Length: 275
Length: 287
Image (cartoon, chains in turn red, brown):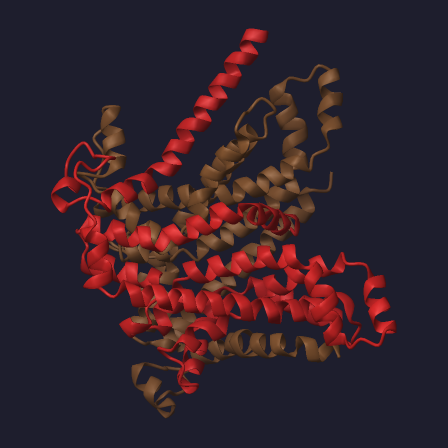
């Protein structure tokens, strides 16, 4: 019995390890190919360690192709989307959690229902709207439509609901305004929730593809995901160059994730429990 | 005061979500095309003609069939794989849990567009690592993305690989929510591992399973980036999805009226499946 248990433990670890190798292998190969010449990449069996690692692919992306611009665009958009949407969603989340006003619950339900609407249904009118506003091919056009979302409001409301009312009442007795309470009492207590939601938003913006593809038709407004897709179409078979491009897109988000992963798991668990 | 706090959110959702939701239905009743983009006066009301055209459009049916094929195969496989890994990681005797969790989760956070490009390389018939791994066990791999029969299975494999970690984390949370004393009580009664799984874990995991299934179905029906980047719907339209077809009609040909009709049909399908699943979930959990 004891032996059987040990055997099953070992077997489970081997299975998990094989799975893990399969999960990670594409990234390892992406990274190693990005340091190869085309001649070296096109060898069989595939090499995982370049014999003479080169940086030419990265140099080409930043020098000859315009990856500096794409990188800047992606960061600008992600930072603006994250900060503004944290502010607007937490403001609404606070009102839905703690302020009594007429029609509050019905309105909240209506907002939650918008989660069922897929982006493809609204994208065409939003695109036409952006043309009216003159925001096609601008940073604003990339940023503005995605600032407020039902999920962000829901997430902040759930967290703010757990903050005791006494704190708010005490501030009200001291004559604090509603906005002061939001900014000085509630927000400092929301730091973990803001960190989690902020990370989700930043990553969502960094990775987003459909909307930037539509609104940024001019290459100087491309974000990294759009740029890598276009590069894949133009340099379809130069895989070392494409892998260097993919590494540039993926690496920052992986680094952010590795540093801040504890906020991720807590956030996903929260979304999982809402069902 | 409450209204003041929510007004920016309401204005934004109204302008970019509620209004477009109705506007796109309106658009779907017009022949809004590339000329109308410059001058709206050139679009005219044509009633349900777009919807009639759509039902006669072979490419719509192909894209719908592909999307359903993709979802019907990928949803159960993806859920089975993530549940299996979650169950393994939830065992008491497994060491280095954090490390494994991290590794399985990594693909989830990475940019789909970039990962799709990486997988074009991974699936390369002559030099890619998939066919290399297959050759190690004596199988000669197909041409994957260039082969109409194997392109969709290849995309399915990639999407499962990418999404596994997400559902795994949700399942792990669900598993940890099951009270330990249920297992202890059953073990005292002499239940074995499979019995514990079948009679305690599976029924008690039902709410999590329900949530995961709905979210996965909705997500998969909107399948777009992978075929857009990896195959552009080919070969021979084998991987064109509904959303890819909407994109093509809307933003390559600027048939915005027709594309809106396509989008509305997809919307109706998603809503129907969601409500159906909610209804099935309600009735079957009452025992």
